[in-house]
Length: 278
Length: 254
Figure 1 (cartoon, rainbow over the protein chains, first blue to last red):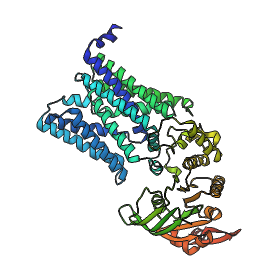
Figure 2: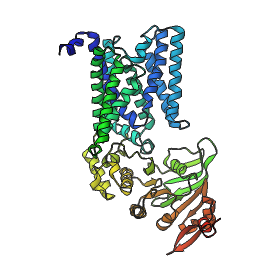
Figure 3: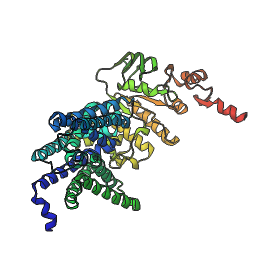
Figure 4: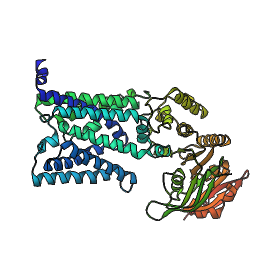
């Protein structure tokens, strides 16, 4: 038992644990809308895009959150705008905009050298650099996401289910999509410290996909996905400490293992799939 | 009679050549009109212009002040595995602006009334994917009716329905129209529309013909709209279309 409690003696671990748990909950919550919109790849894209902002702000000595945040939001809004015009598909827009940004980040860091967090820490996550200010920021972003979902729950549901009809019914689809993209960018940004650029997408996708296997109710989906994300963050952080493996990898591996188990169970026992659970 | 929607010399494009052009059309209160044409003829583009989701590249469109439009999309565009119940789909029509996530008593009563009116009141808590095609169609009509529209616009409402369900659907629409609702729908189904709708608009980029089924369903109009020669017979006073090419190939195999 003492072995399990050992890491709690370290401030850096406690801060990292809080951030990982809240980040998991946040990504699980926002991920529901992303997965149901068929945009699972966007989390992967935005995290890579933010890496470009991370590199640029690191080089010019600008605040990481402001620099990378503005960069990520601009990328997400550009993706949403390009996708809406339907000249190219969402996957193509995500690929071009975010990979271009990622390549720029790599080029900048290679040319000018890194003055901020290490390259590895950015890619795979590290809890060593987590400060109390990071904790406050991620809790703030979770509060923002909850407020957005509370006040615009119906519009978010309608635009996720049927955006074209939502527009004809008087819902401001552009505003709702822009809000979601901004919150998604902020969620990705504040999650990068612990999860890392390469694995953020998994925290957005795995919890809602598992939750979808467990319920056919939208509000239960939100609750289960949020809970699963938080649990993966908490357990993954503890495993990261004990196994001495980067936190991002353990958090994602826990999610992947749970997904495999649930999927296998549902494949063997399809009759237990929820029919109507509202 | 003041038209609900009036299109004057309207054209629309997605960036290339005009998809629809020279559209002059008044949609009057209480009408029941079928827009007929093959795939690519501009039916859906015309609906988008009527709905206001697409701006004309030329001409003008005038809608009655405060006009409420209900829209029922093509069923093929729906994600049937989306985790929502019938009542939640209908409630989506009340999504504008700031609203509490949960439905008020009044909203629940509105949803119940709309579902009862369409004969699916007992399905409120069912998941969408557990319904039949006709029931699913009714759910989306209920969602459109919640906003108490003056006009209901439907994209291919009879597509994918079996003959009996299609007849039920068209009878339901007739009863809604008798209650004063204007209905405009698109369709490929010439014979079904000729039997039920008082007015058709045949399009192939432009309006080729409009008027009663007898005025529109004529071989020369159908050849221009569908690019195929068709024979038109009369059955109980209603025009019935027969594809001549199939007849020919059956009688004279190559």
